[in-house]
Image (cartoon, rainbow, N blue to C red; front, side, top):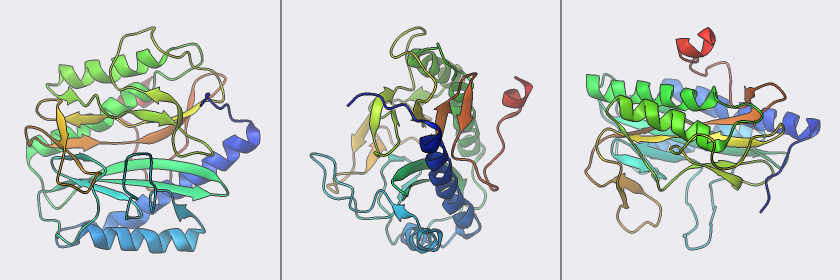
Length: 268
């Protein structure tokens, strides 16, 4: 599949889908506290998507070699790296959870995720969550025509490793548009000046998975989806969908409740 470049109508369609995905997370935010189950979170999200007139991209999603995904979003708790399936286990004080939402609106996909700290967490957990957010933004601010995808991955990897964390290699960002997953693949590690050159109209996700311990991951259980850290260390992830503009970038998954960018972004 070749890289798709979005025209003005495509950009507008993706802005709408991206905002709606972020608004699902806004809606969920006050509900994510000790005692709620991730299945409750999934039900709340499905109801909100109905009121938006959007639909979940994950429910029933079945890439080759996978069983159909059974929920309207992904909830990855503590050492779950990604693709955690909502269940009936209540969240407890000190948990960290990534909620990953992808909606479809008028044929366009919007994909974003946020970390939530349940109640009060340890200093180490909060540091991982906060620095993973910064790592994502270190990648985003690199985006402009003429740079290479390797420049984005290098910026994320350098920042994460400088802070004593590791970057998951097996999962990456991806192009997105009228399909959930398009070209290019967006690695969160790499070398400057390598891989595809960015051009206006490209849209893709930047979604680093950062581990407090080692970078190795493994499948958990036999559900076909859930990925965990091999050493049982905490993992965090944030995700935005980004457009390459004529002069830089536009984050397409912002909403009224989106966390503000780190101070270094505004300074730049």
